[in-house]
Image (cartoon, rainbow, N blue to C red; front, side, top):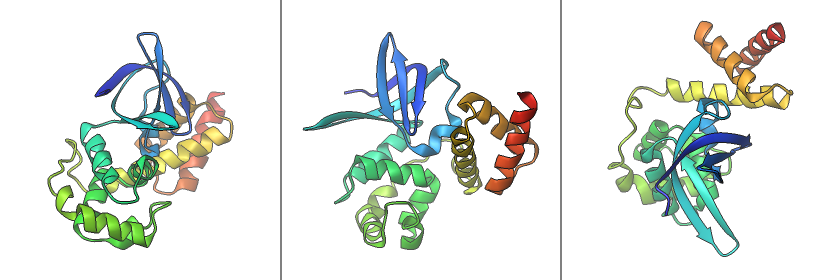
Length: 202
């Protein structure tokens, strides 16, 4: 029904965003992985969307890339994987790592995603190994997994700072500043140095 939505980012609550598109507010569930890369509030955001309808709910899911949306739809074809589980998989692992782990039959790596046990990981590999080969990765995602690890680190630090009471725009700015200058690889150091920046700018 909806191929994509483009509008002002009005609100972010956990892994749900609200987009104002021509005066209508759309609530969209997104992978937690993209949170550090969202623009500041009231700036324009485009999300490729999947509209899921069931008897008790109608839910929009949104993604940064069309390829991400396609992998989401492929995951839905796996027995026992619903939209929430598919979203958790995309939130817990980068597209390149996900594709590689399925192709390499790396059950152990897949099982590290929260909510995905060994049986589910094995089923994903069995049912998607052939299908995943034809899935293209977004441009710029054909390098190693450093960018995925960096995204996880930034996301976790951002959520920790927000839980401490800092506003999301300021926390995001501080985290990005630390990553640009020091390229921290430990969450404790990233949070500590970000707090220093936030306190100095208060």
